[in-house]
Image 1: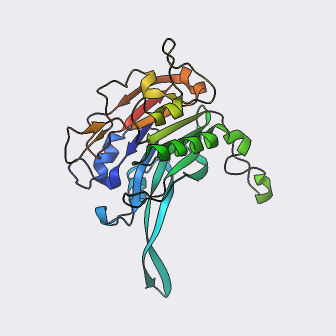
Image 2 (image 1 turned 180 degrees about the horizontal axis):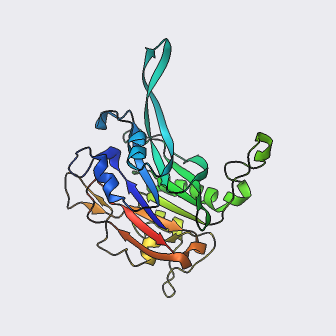
Length: 286
């Protein structure tokens, strides 16, 4: 199974050209895709409904969308009924297999006074893969404050690690005439974390490495798939400044539950993609 994560920057590439088809070409062959910065009503890309655009580009995939930030822009009356135009900014998951349940997890945030800070989220999908149900999260953390990112990671880990006890999206669903969705233990958390390797936020997610043993598999600490496969180096990057291509950072990750590590076959960064200011990351499970 092949998983890909891509912050698509509203559909704008390194050249600032809007080209969703270019983004889709970079994701060909992925069974499950986690997207960030998927928008509706955004002036930067002409207000296009990127959810519909990406769904049309992957007609054989199921999809869900979680607009963590949702604002009213305008209204008009159509055939006698008010229709709102909304600004939405969030995460999307596309899957070759049915998405059995979905939650939009709103991450903690604090008001800012001089920098952009919009509501962030984690879009949770329970997917019916051929090897059994699996959880996938498409995540986008705050880009300004390490303190806020740590708060968001703490909240996210609490939701992810206590998923089974919390019961996911619903339990006792037979009262509504439907079956309870499964509650799988294993998960992948993919997305733009806006943190660099070995930063305080990164260590809040993975735990600190021991000077002798490094990072061992431990309950409560997801595993960085790229690092596990040797794809994280001093030169590895997943973000490039559109105005100054020499300005580069490693901001995007896929974290696995320890139970999935024996199935991890490969993880890499697609350094050839130009459909966004970010680069896609890929993970393959056997």
